[in-house]
Amino acid sequence: MATRHFLTLLDLSPEELNHLIQRAITIKNRLKAQGPTYTPFTNRTLAMFFEKSSTRTRVSFETAMAHFGGHALFLSPRDTQLGRGEPIGDTARVLAEMVDIVMIRTFSHAGLEEYAAASQVPVINALTDDYHPCQLLADVMTWTECRGSVKGKTAVWIGDGNNMCHSWINAARQFDFRLRICCPPGYEPNADLVAAAGDRVEISHDPQQAVQGAGLITTDVWASMGQEEEQAKRERDFDGFQVTEALLDRAADSALFLHCLPAHRGEEISTTLLDDPRAVVWQEAGNRLHAQKALIEFLLLGKVDD
Image 1 (cartoon, rainbow, N blue to C red):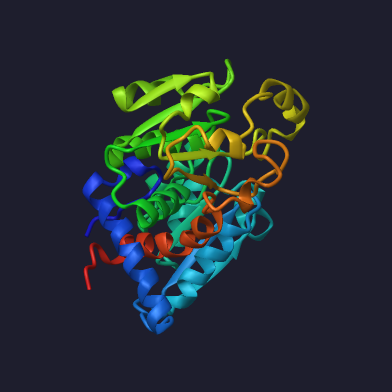
Image 2: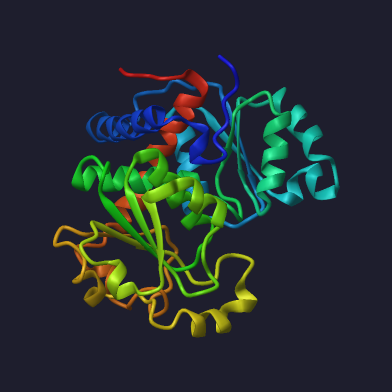
């Protein structure tokens, strides 16, 4: 099988992505019923490059490989020759001789693409400044678990047109749902991505209108990693874009709330929103483990249906 990478949701077909969601649910249910007895990756190694800090990403990938009988190797810039200027392609070629799969959490999406182009083993995007596709697998999995097929439904993104927003746009294309993006003027997502999504995506600047009748509301912090110096300005610009219980009341009665976490209570969400029964963020966070298991399995073994 040719080497497959997962740098954005567009790297897999809609059919493959829907398979991953259903497979992740199966893996999760099996784990709950039987424990970690499915170990297809004995003596296999996942190399994990972290240039950005992480809680959920590191724990979920390490646990996934442990449950699968394999090993996860943590690498920071201090631990590799990349931190001393070794070309990205050279590192990729060396690691492909030693490990079975690579996960990278970094700033530059172009750098990730350069690594993948030189790698003979699968490469997973665990977050760049442009995309966060692994989070979307967990998000769509959670939405599916709670409300069934997402096809034709409506989600609302409230906040910055950032890497999470970009991945939500790609998700709308691949899973065939409608996405309303609501952001302050000047914080719109990449225009080419929006155009490529066609009528599945629309942009607005009024949260009260955007959430009307929607089945899912989601947001992210106003200042992402690397934007901390913009915090004060962004707090001013995003005034009126906080997601609250009252805002969710304007959505559909069955609406859910998601947040990729960590959340800043009192900023992008009200201080009590995560306690609302419509917020399924803990289930969403836990589903990172199961969705990534399905992804690793697919990249290394292909489609598995047992």
